[in-house]
Length: 209
Image: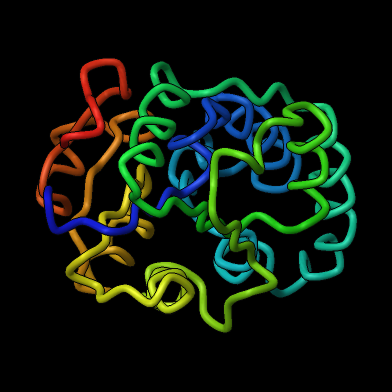
């Protein structure tokens, strides 16, 4: 990847192994508000909060959105943010070779403050951190990744995206970038058609990828 100038990482399921914790949270909400749809928490994996609300919390449930948002914010404050295996070594290797690195996440600043408290070193791993407040459109729209590329003055073809969700993978593809899929949220078989390669973590990679 000699031509790659920027590596753009989603957050949950890509930098941090948090998806199982979100499944627990949404499992509780879905059982409370959609008991008629067992397993709904697995169907909404990788979707943004707005997408979940639009699809499942409209009509009479619209009034429940503030409550769920309050619960989610509180939950994210006490989540355990553990790096995906091999990530720290990999991202430091990229930076040592002059590759720009960025987090491109649908998470908000409130959640990121919790991340920074738990990981004081987090900001030193990236040249930029873009959150939901920076984007006009949610994934799978390419807006977020195109904005990240513009931040670095790089062309889409000079960027590689690391993603785990269907929406995120589609976003990277739509942006015209190389896409590496992490099989942390969905199976390798389910995501392989949406990316250039699939990995389970970063332990087998080096910054030459």
